[in-house]
Image 1 (spheres, rainbow, N blue to C red):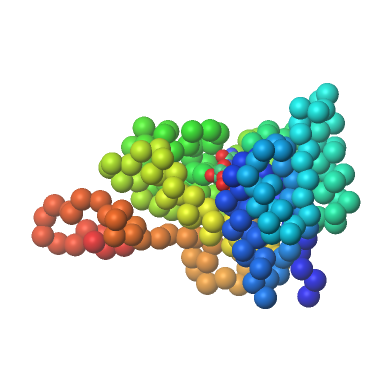
Image 2: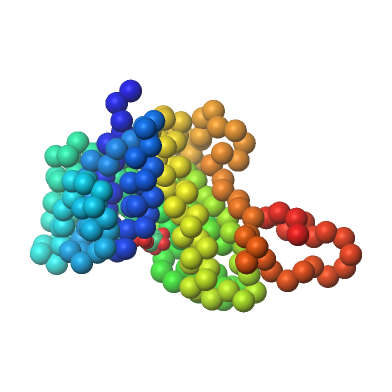
Length: 237
Ligand code: GAR
C-alpha cells in the first residue's frame, strides 16, 4: 500500500518531528515525511530534517505582507510535494480559517494539555496553578478556533506536588512523542473518521487511542496515608 505523504510544520526544536522521523523509519511504516517546513530558519528542527535526509524548507512569515499570503505559500509548497496530511508539530503561528478549511480533516495539531482544558500558551504553569491532578497532551484535527477540533489521541500524566512548569513539560513531552506518531499511524491505516465533531477510531482495542502511563520510580508522589493501597487511576502505589 502507498505510504501516506505527511508534511510537518515546525517553529522550534522539533522533538515531535524527530518522533515522526523515527516512526517513519520503521520498515512497516504506513507514512512518509514528504516535506518539513519551518517558519524560522534557526529552528533546530530544520537541522533534524537535514540530518534525516528529508525534503525541507523555510518559509519565513516575516517575508509576507499578510497572513493569507504566507499561508498561500505554505499550501502551494505542501501541495507541490504531494502532501496528504499536514502535522503542526510545535508550529507557533495562528492559522486563518481559510487555511484550516482548505486542509479540513487533513490537518492535525499536537497541543501540550488535555484539551479542552488549557488552550493557548503556558499550559503547564496554568495546570499547576489550577491544581489539577492530571495533565497531558492532545492530538486533534484543527478547526478555525485555536486549539479546538475533534480529538484523535490523548495521553494523561500525573501532576506531582513538587512539579514546576519545566518538570511537568518534560513529562508531557515524552508522551507527545508517543501520541503524535500514534495519531499519524491511525490516520494512515484509515482507522480515523470524524463523525459530527468527534473522532471514531475503528478496530482498535479499548484504550487504543488513550495513553495513560504510570509514573516512573523517580516521579512517584508521596506515600498514601492510611493502610490500604491507593488507587489513583495512574496505577497502584
Ligand atoms: C510541544 O510541546 C508542542 O506540544 C507545543 O510546542 C512544543 C514543540 O516542541 N505546541 C504548542 O504549544 C502549540 N499550541 P518540539 O519543537 O520539540 O516538538
